[in-house]
Image 1 (cartoon, one colour):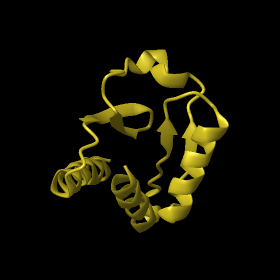
Image 2 (cartoon, rainbow, N blue to C red):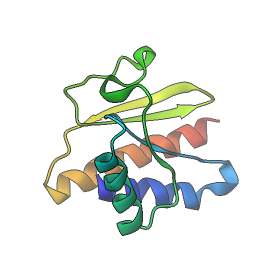
Image 3 (tube, helix red, strand yellow):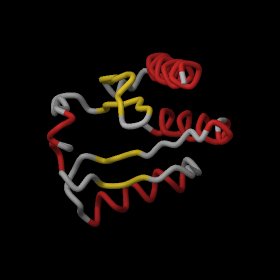
Image 4 (tube, one colour):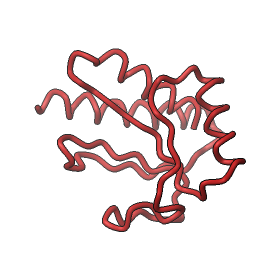
Length: 115
């Protein structure tokens, strides 16, 4: 997740003029351990985007109908409308991670172009 988070953080920084924004939501319980995990990720990856723990816990917001079996879901939204939805496997394979990040960023670029 760290490489994807960093790629998204960089994309947001590179597209400030287009008012690009992002945040990472951990769908889990609000515990000290989870807060420490997010803080460590932010520090180690030097992230500037917000990292938060979702108020809805592991299920996420009910209207999103997220698949609880998928470890990483990325939603690309524009004006509260989902433009792309990625269910990622959290692979340990660096090539697979790079491809996932590339696909996510391509969808974000397309969203910007379609505005």
